[in-house]
Length: 281
Ligand SMILES: [Fe+2]
Image 1 (tube, rainbow, N blue to C red):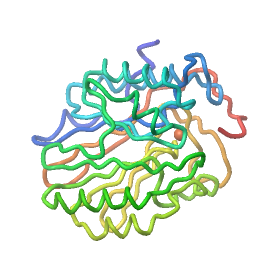
Image 2 (cartoon, rainbow, N blue to C red):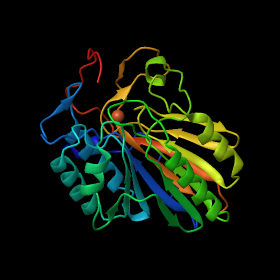
Image 3 (cartoon, rainbow, N blue to C red):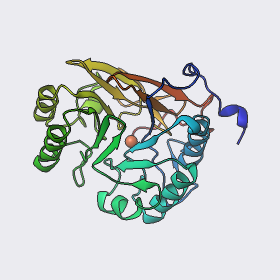
C-alpha cells in the first residue's frame, strides 16, 4: 500500500480534542467478503477497507470508540466476520457493531463478539449514551424498526435522562433526495422521529447505507450519513450511479455540553479498478 494514498484530504481536526470530549470513528458499509479478492464495482473491498483503517490509525490515540454501522460483510460469511473482528481487535480501541441489509444479524452476532469487539444495544461513555439499533428486515433491502427496537430505544432514553444520546442505525431515517436510495429508507420513520422529539437529550442520529455524506438537522438533532469504506453513490441523483469520491469514515467529537463536532475524512485516492458503468450493487 502506498503510504501517500492514506493521507488526509479533508481538514484535520484542530490539534486533538477538547478537554472532556469523546471521540468516535464511524466505519461503515465495508462490504467485505469471504474471498479477499472479491470486488464491488471493480473495487477490491478488502484493500479499500484496509486503506481506510490505515487512515483511521492516524487518529487512534485520541479515539474512544469505533462504531461499525452495517453492511460489514457483503456475503455475511463467518470467515468474513472473523477476519473483520481480528482487524478491528488489532486496531486496539473498543468497537461496537450493528447490522445492515447485507449482513445476517445472527451471524454477525455470533462472530463479532470478543475482546474489544461487541454488538451491544447501548454504550455509556462519559455523560453520553450511544444506542445501537437493528433496522434490518430479513431478505429486504429497506429498513424498519420493530416494536421491540422502538421500545428498547424509548426505555434507554427514559432510563438515562441525564445523558446526552447519540442513536446509530444502518438505514437512513429521512429521505436524502435520491429516489432509488429513498426506496430503501426506513419505512416507519414517524414513530422513530416522534420518539426522538419527545426526549430532549437526543443530540444526534448516525447511519450508513447511503454510501455518501449527508448532514441535516431535525428539530435540533444532528442527522448524519457517512461514506462507505469502498464505493460511493452519486449524491442528489434519482437513479443509481457510482461516484468517484474516495472512501472514508466519519469522526465525531461528543462534547460534555451535548454538542457534536463531526466531519468526514477520506483517503487521498480511489483504490484501483472502479467501474463507473456498474448498473447496480
Ligand atoms: Fe452498503
